[in-house]
Image 1 (cartoon, one colour):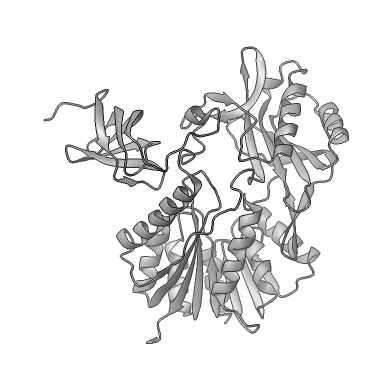
Image 2: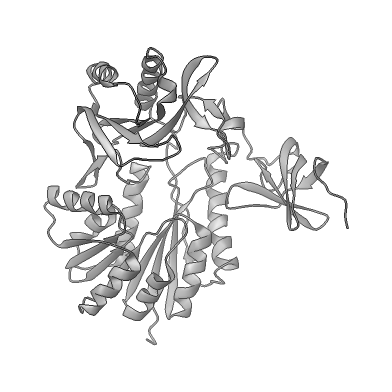
Length: 447
């Protein structure tokens, strides 16, 4: 039995990158993962995990640097853990993400013959996040807003994140200042939610609090008087601070929503609504979905995992009818409201599991010409993939935020009679390891 390498300092040649943005190398034949290391580098790391099949190391020194390495501009990059690739030039980030997608499709999906397009990046990859959730805690006796360290509950106080709009940062700073004027508030305000519309500039503020909390109306009044773009302030009650969102929400000031616009479609976004984090790139993403769907005006379209109907409404104007399916009832309510305010009548939203509701549509004789799926990171349910194969739509469009589960699902679809034709990566989250993809899938002619 070999001696443990735990706490040993070792030199490693970094030859690749994981889907979590960690550098990959080998020591004595065992894979080692090193966060903040880039391919092509030689680094010194300290082994912090020694498992049977892998090692994980903390980066101590870059001995030989990747020529595309840069110094991150963020003050808390070493603690926050939110930007896994900020130490690489942006064009290098795009190249690495494209390679991650290609590698997953080939290695996990055993796919070939597809057309891989260049990733669509951003002209200005900063300040793009339209939503942030700050953790609230006390540091040296003062209430601070910030983020938890990766895989911990230790607060990193920080409101000047470069991924956030400057207006959001200013509101966050004022919220922090005002909270410090209320006794014992830190024990009752767990998190602060902020959202901002790219097109309208409207902002929404949410206080996520435990049930035993003081009245926040005075703070809400001061903030909404100071910021003309702050249109909604709400308070959400959770039973404990670890609960992400509670069932009870009250309006403190303004209205219950803000509005966003993608092309000619207006969306109402409440505190609990799902909406893409990057509005500018979301527009690009949906345009690519529309292009890949190849709808001409007479098609029946299924939009599975439709959320608040963002893609469904984008497709409806060029379709005969769109059926959107979503398991979260509140999201379906938002989707119906979004259809109403845009006067879009040829769309039906169904609440329920995609795998079940799609079978019900089949039983009613409603079969799709095109299926669009936009699943969570875990990918499609196996019965959703089965529904695609059994209903035999001419085309399918897969929107993915996880190359690994995307590749797994595409392998099943290709075995079921479909061909992956085109892959379009989109950089929705610059400086992080996340990458979005739109996939054009066609039924093989032999079927």
